[in-house]
Length: 124
Image: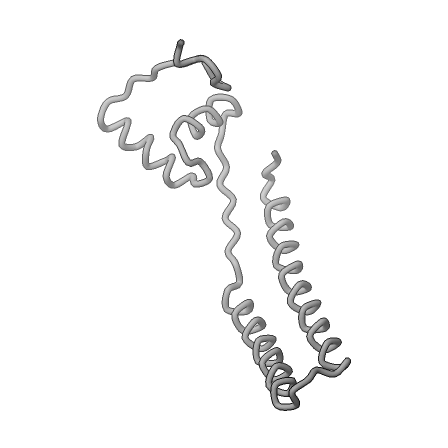
């Protein structure tokens, strides 16, 4: 049984580097991000001529603030329900509203990220 059996990429090509070249190649691979292996990085570079790195910084401060605010509201509803010993229809509606608000915030963050990707000129 050959090592090639069952592999999706059975063709192997060797590339020789000096120690200095290998150091630079590894540094570029790590800086490029997105590829778990050097093989994947090199394959993309050879096939498409470039490797683009799109960095999408998350607005973590805004997200943390919004999630904390919603969490306080959820805790207030839970406290009311526990104090009464039962829930009322308005409690369920309020929780559903808070959930929709959370989903809306996360959807906007995802849309912002998608817009940044599209604006970067990167295409799959």
